[in-house]
Image (cartoon, rainbow, N blue to C red):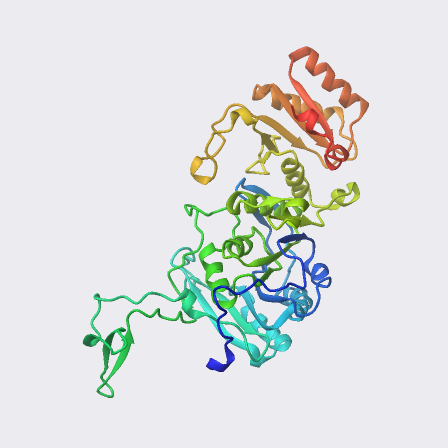
Length: 458
């Protein structure tokens, strides 16, 4: 890269630049629709990691609560995947500033086709790096070479762009390896060590106090594993250190970072922690709610219009709000929406869950410590089951099944969620209370949408 192509670093006291768009927003919906609402050239850095599903059904865990959902394969072939991504990448290129950078994270499934597509959209001259992110776990096979790397394509939209490799430079090791030359200090007080180049007989000088600029072959950042402290359970979750490297190198404080497939929200958390402005988009309502929880828990941000307008929080926009919309989303999405809306914890499994879609833990039962190190809540005996039915009218057989769950686990209270209830179902709920003293609380989707559930959760 020529030095003239890189924008000068801003002074440390640089004033926050005026933004053309609102930031600290998570949009729920197809990013194609959401991106079309953004003006041209308004984003400084784009990172995306779109899922590629190859004739498989995935079961995906969302968030720290380890909610699992299943979703059908959207991309039956590489061509279908590229056809799906092309118009979205066109919109991403449009909203990227002329001085902006674009990172596309992918694996072996379609990387070569993605490169061709991006060259067509952004121009082959805009391509800067094919970054290879190496990790030393996973990828075992006896039939082919173990797959232990991802590819990240790095593009710059215009003739000049911001890049600060020193911000993510690797400290040179000193005193551990001999370069075949002397250690010394030059006239400016900089420490150096010389390396002998045998082919020429000359020495190459390394300045030891200057960081080594990372190459396009990245090691030292491992993939997320089951024992990782930051693990949320999402199978393609990327480590926060990886996103921090990209954001540090290709953006400045208060620059706008966009992730249009933000999944479990790692890019948003990294951007927030590094004092960048950010915008997230995801098609999953459940993912957006879990992202909101993560931003609150990890970044200590407040959610809501008032806090957002005061510059102290964020908002989630365009979540499904009508009964009609909620009837159309996949069943596991609907279960996740309902459980999270009640303040519950979704069940870890959807198959063989014994009829329990989630649990509510009363405030008095929660431990003082929170977070992953505090441990799971399964050991706690004070909890109420939640069962969610995406039905127009829940009937008596459903109530009978839930009564069996209440009896099996000896729960004093439980919650049912449906769009409505038959008169027989409501009558059976009353009869069960008179017979056992156990309370079943029937909640409708309308009551949840209208936030009329507080009095029933007591």
